[in-house]
Image (cartoon, rainbow, N blue to C red; front, side):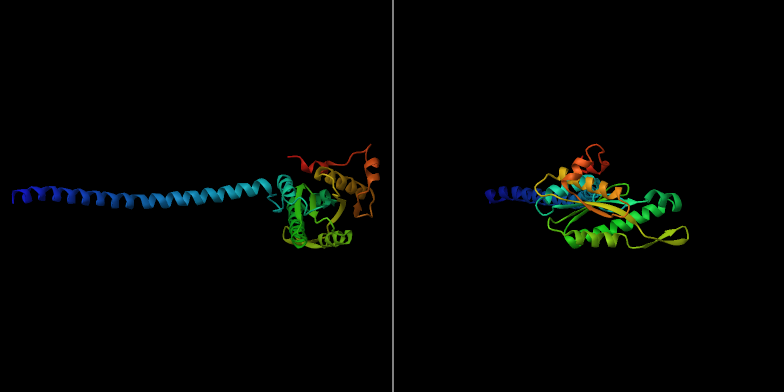
Length: 233
């Protein structure tokens, strides 16, 4: 009996310690769950912020198209799938801003951005705004010039822009230069498209010009505009 009585206090002590530990663990879990939910919510918020700033770093905020940095990255990622570059520049854009205001100009750029995005989606290409009224389409290598002309037709369709309390019909006018990659680097291809655009700009009734090697010689003394810098970071 003496041995039996000597074992009971230890058993009661062990049970008490076990209950205390169990209660402490439950309390810790109760305190941890809200903290864990907060950490999870913070992590999701941080992930959204990262995606937002990643998008902003590679897209034009007005049109939603790729910007220069986004273009550079995507051209490298789609290397081999794309090989036709079309540089597009609006004609008489400054008079539009001067006459109807910058809101009308921004509205027109937004409409053009939407049309270019649809063209890029339908052709499995890329669309970018390089700045101001300058845009770029990167299309598959075998894209016919007639398909590019059809895209330009959609871009120059009249659109109604809200100017104050009035809707003004605007028919965009543009010039474009087309170049094929044909084994050249993207930098050279963009430069060739820029030379072609420069040639189209020089001829009032020529909307689209295709790059030919003689343009390089003709443009040597009179370099084209800043579109050739599109690959600069």
